Image 1 (spheres, one colour):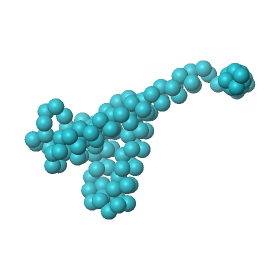
Image 2 (cartoon, rainbow, N blue to C red):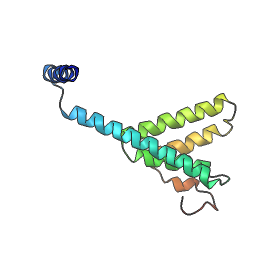
Image 3 (tube, rainbow, N blue to C red):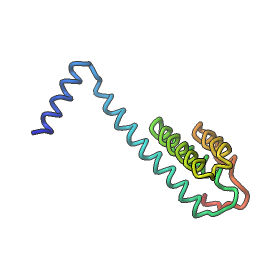
Length: 127
């Protein structure tokens, strides 16, 4: 009963305010891209931990942001939120010595630039 009432109210809102049905499709796509972008960021972080290579963190920052941003606006927003939260938390606990360089790598990848700019020598080819 409640679900039917909610559906009727949404239908009335759409009719009343002339909201296009494609708004819901765009919202669904945004949410899908946001979730995918968050997974891309997690995968880059996991790969960075697994690689355990000195100097590779900037590469993984750029790569995670690049892959997330390729998904669209939702992925780009997920990358920005996650990157900024991480850098903020690192600074808050006093470990943000290279935070500005990390943020540059984040922006580089998020803007669609090649993350290999930050790839260090000796990093395993699978990454």
